[in-house]
Length: 535
Image (cartoon, rainbow, N blue to C red):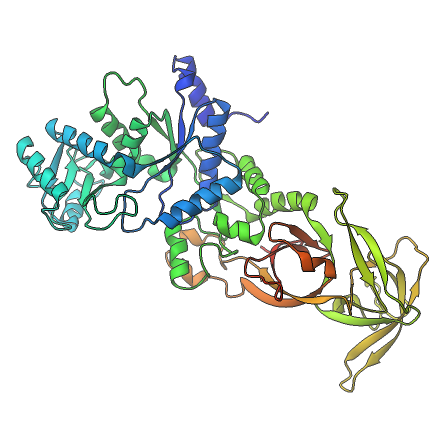
């Protein structure tokens, strides 16, 4: 049983004070303007875990208030990712479902004298806000009458005004040190087609207005978000207090926790989109990205990702997590499930002089399974070039002239002589086979030359050359040009039936999986993770 995080302690305290446990409710509110990344998994895991622990609903709500960036394809991608991770939501909602209610609540604020239509442009409003250390300048339209504001707001809704001609602002405090409270914008005019509501609306609520009010309408008890929204907290509470109904006993409260920062990675949809736009990565599912679709294509498992999120925990302290911790959980899980196969990357031909016929060997695929595979052993085999040394040295224990080694799942051999071509390069090695097995011999992996077949490999390294790309403005300049390297290899015939969902351990190399762009005539494998530390 792991210790309670600070959010669990807050919830437990609320329950002790009399908050009805049955009224606990949690949500994950992604904006459908991109694909999910590892940072989102932390939020999903947290809200799902709390909902499961306290037997409250876990709601998936799409914050689709910006028709300029949101698309239905992102909705489908987000749902696919959440399902793949193993989480289930009890209810699926959309901010756009509440557009009419939000509009009516905004009119309620106008009639309370808490909101007004400002006929200034965006730049003028920004300049009047000043900085936290300066006195803000009030809009010349701040004291419009309630009647005039209602009339103008209705005109905004009807499409009378052009984009940028006016906005609806909350009337709070233009001298507040928190700039979020300096009369924030609640509605702006956007005459763009919304993927869901089509052309029904020409005014759209801002995140600050829609987010908290949707929590209120859905009776969310604890609204959890990352620390960058800390300054939004007072505004979140202010809006709730303005619209609350006396009969509604559930007033959501916002609590912030640290976001996930992973070394050599970016946890920002906007920045990832910039990488895609500038063709520095292929797409959202590029295996070098920390997006869920990218990790899935790379070969990560839901279990390894969730175990990683569980270990880093929930706190208020911002920190950077080393990518090796994620790889640790990945390797730990892959070691249990991956099928063992033999693949040779830089082949060197061995001819076994005293072996004539092909022998089919039987080998277990994984020590945790009862599945076996057949491996052809023939007169000519490939081994890795690095596993042979013409002149043996004291610290070299693999194949050399007169040195015995074990072939994985097969026999002992020794090298007798070297045959070279006209250029002086090794053409092949003549060897002798010993069927009697002995212990304490170096073991080499291999493939049959005549039964093996070529495959293509994508090797992946860190995407960035700097540890903290999120901390620099020109992060695109630090993309590692060698983050993806293509290679060819020779595989044992068992891999001809490789499946995309299966994971494979290429013995002595690392873990790999079949890429989605593979075909029966062109198998492409992505390196999931190497046995060696790449960072």
